[in-house]
Amino acid sequence: TPVIELKDVSKIYSLPFGDVTALNHVSLEVMPGDFLAIMGPSGSGKSTMLNLIGSLDVPTDGDLFIDGTNIKNLTDEELTSLRRDNIGFIFQQFNLLPLLTVKENVEYPYILKYRHGDYEGRCEKLLERVGLTDHLMHHKPTELSGGQQQRVAIARALINNPKIMLCDEPTGNLDSKTGSQVMDLLAELNRQGKTVIMVTHDADIAEYANKKIVITDGEIK
Ligand code: ADP
Ligand code: ADP
Image (cartoon, rainbow, N blue to C red; front, side, top):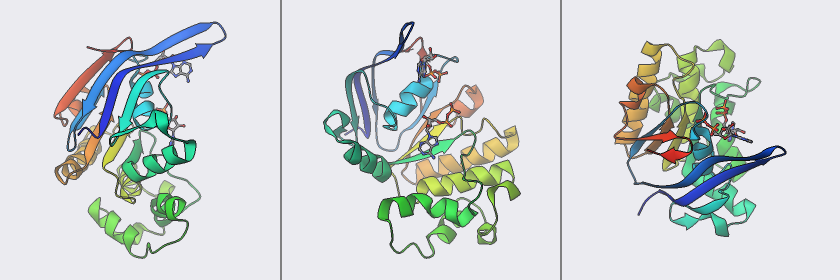
């Protein structure tokens, strides 16, 4: 079964001066182990689609299934827990919390999920998995390079062992060499079984994916 399925999904933003149709009757299946690139011009609906897939927003119309569950039938709390169990988020701006150390940033989603629990050693293992040494643990994000910060963000995204990694322009803030290294890491995580769904407008970056869709004016071409 698909890990993500959109069935005839539309997203309409109601604004004081009229409605904006950001997604227009879109259907899509993402299978376990896929590496999907979502491409398209600015304003075409890519972020809207990623926000829906990440259950940060809900469709106006149609059905969205995450790991087989129709999110229509869920309470806000159930949706939050479905998101925490299944999805790791990676952003262009890294979105690390600047006042927390690397270790605290990585552990944060785990603590949000379990409140307490045994996370001893998890951060060290995850940093190793993303290619960082654990002596960076007590540094603040601003003391790290962009590539290192994105690796920390990937470690944070992995801590609750999600099936799906959602990446919004993951290399958008990195030079091309550092960007390729981060993409190699995402490709490795994909080989290890993670489903990766990535928005990018960079055709070279999209080459890392095994499936591509192009959105234009809210529709998949
Ligand atoms: P992309 O990520 O491809 O640049 P978006 O999904 O951000 O495209 O935007 C698709 C369309 O929806 C655009 O016309 C945009 O202006 C509109 N839009 C996006 N988010 C909102 C919002 N929160 N409120 C109103 N309109 C929005
Ligand atoms: P943009 O692409 O417009 O710069 P971001 O990629 O920073 O926006 O964020 C995309 C969406 O994810 C926004 O709706 C934002 O509120 C939400 N978001 C940002 N950071 C996080 C986070 N750490 N966890 C969950 N959702 C987030």
